[in-house]
Image (tube, rainbow, N blue to C red; front, side, top):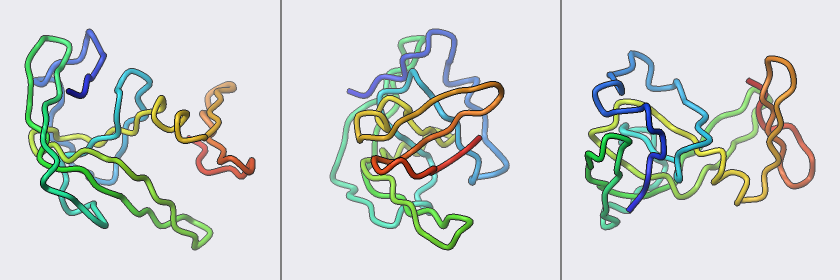
Amino acid sequence: MVLMNEEKVYPSQLNESEDENMWYLDNGASNHMTGSKALFAELNENVMGQVRFGDGSKVPIKGKGTLLFDCKNGDQFIIPDVYYIPALHNNIISLGQMIEEGYDIGMKREFLRMYDEEGCLIMKV
């Protein structure tokens, strides 16, 4: 079971986003997840499970795969182990999962910065 460990977030608050390219950086989510099947570079639909929300409700996981992002400098950025949850109308990057994968995340003033293991800036938001 995957936990969305946000006591104040409930499925009714996760309304459809008009922009499937919008991502929420979440320090409470245990895993990366998206409701958009089209975003996956590869997807294993044999992976099943459930996500439990803060109100105790659960929604099914319908797969797990890899996302591939195009960076501004022309490089590509891979995010593996992303759950496909059709009932989720938002995209979530788990900051905890990124740290487990070796990324360094810091906040200073109004910016969050993420660096890879070599110290290269991956994102500044």
